Length: 451
Image 1: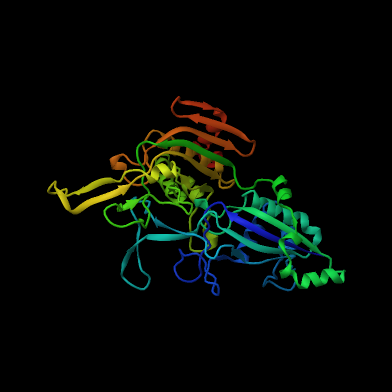
Image 2: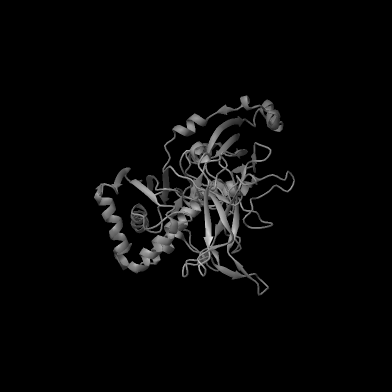
């Protein structure tokens, strides 16, 4: 028996599949078709990683295969029981997003600078990251050569559909989530001559020739390995907010010099990377005051000289849509000037124009179940407290009152038991004090107590 799955998926968050050529910030482009695609190895790798969380090495190797090690002939080896194709995007060219990024020096709080390799030229760490926009659809095929493993494969597909698996890079910035649009299954009985003919001409089969199983996958109860806590911050902008984009559409006097970043759906957003950077900066101040800088390393991870010396963080911060798109489209352009601090007059060419945004927003953050999540949650809640009282801002313009968030409530969901704790900064009330106390104590604890 050979089982073929014909899968159509849609990106629910931006997707970044890094390129091996050119700038590392670019997405992977197919060398023949000249359009973005997802390598089969990337899909197989994340599916294997999810399956490995709840199964033994023997079970993982039996399904995904094991290579013979260089230690000798006694090392285990077996072939994978599945084969996966590259992911091919349905449109001729999916919408690409280009977002500005900076690397911040934690000691100075300013943009890092480095030396270009092989030269004495100094260069700042400002760069642009390319993403495939949310809403892009792609298709791929999966073949299973051991029908006894059908249950395992469909549990993995159910986890992908239920957004428990992320594909590609920039995962801590919320990228790589997707839902399945359709999943067709066709079983070929190789003991039948007719079925063997169909197998030989499988590419000519229509979608109707497959059994649609998406509803079955959606109804499956899958163990969630991904998160320890889900945090939602509900509020609105207190005044204006501006996270500058690279390009500004339009020309002439009516075009602003800068405007807020928009995603592929044209919604005005706070990108996950910007929000994560602002939270990290505040969390570092708090951790430094408490003498608990190791929590920062556990939360955001670090890169060492080798993969063994590196560590993945445990926090995911998602893009946040700000306000109503139509209302923000109609917002007036603000006019500002640069003042010469020596003369007190307007600098030559110092007039500039900005298009800000405002409105309601829901910030979504997930803390993964690793690296002492209680400590991360406690430190994050301290930073969110500062956000709610206006001590920190998001985006540019803090000195002129931009980026202040009026926080209405903070909802913390403990994914271990499904209980929710609601913090109301306005009324200064907390429902479910036990969770908050536990996380704050974990931040304050030292040594073995902190574990």
